[in-house]
Length: 358
Image (cartoon, rainbow, N blue to C red; front, side, top):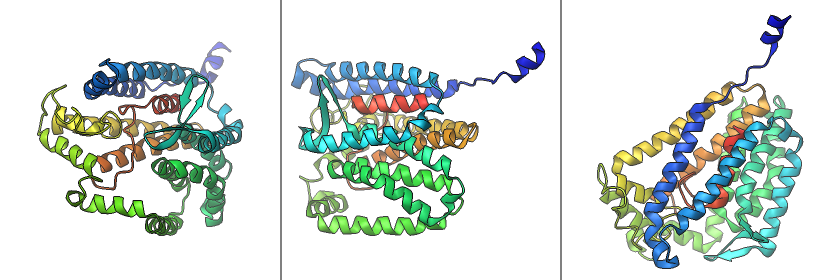
């Protein structure tokens, strides 16, 4: 009897490769954040480690959150997927009605001493919600009508996010579409969907004049030095790094030339200080992270678990690709951060919570 009971015990598996990659990325991000932000921190706040201290505190809280979530059976989240989605919806409405304005953008919500971005919470909420929906209809997803029904469900959240933060709205919409793409056995429907999205994007750009100006600044940055200032300075940083860079802390462009270098354009300073070699190493780290996601998704016990991992993988992959495309001027500047490395407390906590789910 004892031998049989031992055989029937479920084997618990923990992916230490993923844990190592996450901890390394967080640690590397903190080192680079201090290197990039120390000048601005000292000149603005009188403390060279101002941004580092804030980010380190949020990273520590995120790691605790990751460990706690990793101990909770992921099947529980399926029961609460709809309330979590509705909570994200309410928070996004609240940020439009009573959000905190910073740098011309109303994206933050303050509840007592806590200040956070509801759009970041919406990312993990939509991953859990989409995973629950797709796991309930694995066969119906092959019908185009089902795809449209699911998109109608998530459209309110996407539109609310896009209203105040277009880039995050694009990422949330991309997560939903990619999760359906992975779950569906028919790919032809998504070519039609891609055409509709492209048409909507063209109409949006034409009707919004400032978007058109941003497109022109992207196509001809030298002719629009004011609109494309951040992009041009970022390209100078990338180009001056060479093969092995100027050394950690040796960047010139971070000394007030690249605006908000610790946020969206931190990768440009990585290129300047660590060179092409360092940039490739960072990209390889994200490739390894995505590879581990694929391994975990393929070995998941059920479709719900697999779709959660796929959703997180889509989130990370989209942000990395869009961030690298922006800083290299491959696409217009959209304000997308680099996961685990760019400054942002809410983003760090949510990313680590997602790693706990995985």
